[in-house]
Length: 126
Image 1 (cartoon, rainbow, N blue to C red):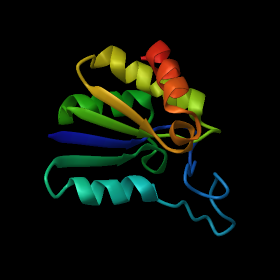
Image 2: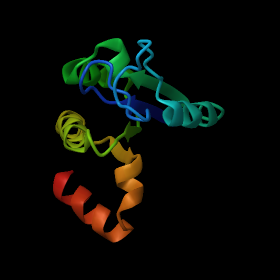
Image 3: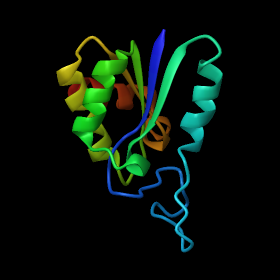
Image 4: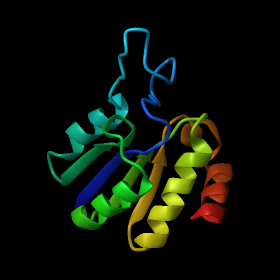
């Protein structure tokens, strides 16, 4: 299976998993830790690609183009509460371009809400 793990574009230097979601005082921008862990596990039996769009300066169009080149079966998108609307918008744009790809949203918003409520929200969006 081909799996694409995405830290979606948002503001430059936005750290979804960081305590403070911008670069630290020393200019540190942490990599997407949880997506990296998942990538390490998945690459044992799958072809994977981890994309850190905020660190790479990529916008939505860059990501959509890259997805077209990689042609994944599954797309995992990291999310956070401050960036949730943006992340859902990115997922919608990808789904419009590549309807056949299964998309999974992960992160605090996905685990905070009950499964039933969150699935209802995602069905409306995707």
